[in-house]
Image (cartoon, rainbow, N blue to C red; front, side, top):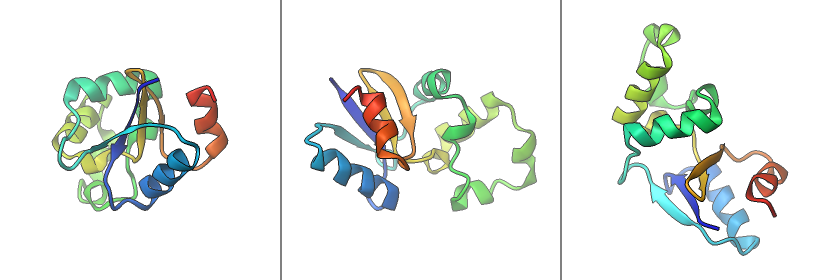
Length: 117
């Protein structure tokens, strides 16, 4: 199994996920989205598997800075916005064997199921 985890190192939720993965001896590759932002094509692929709404980081400064117009944006406008500012992407985002399987980390059981363990 190949597992990539997209996020930023100082994100509290990412840190919890990293700890859980390590405690469960699950190998993963961390991709820092500040240093290596996802491409528009990657984001589009993730949207196909996860849907768009769960992928938006609605609690960050970047989201608040968008103003009221964000309420009427299409999926394509959101994809473009995330491609320009990776801080709009909810973290962490898990990609297993090239397929986005989960965004966020609230329930260990959900991740366990998505990983097939």
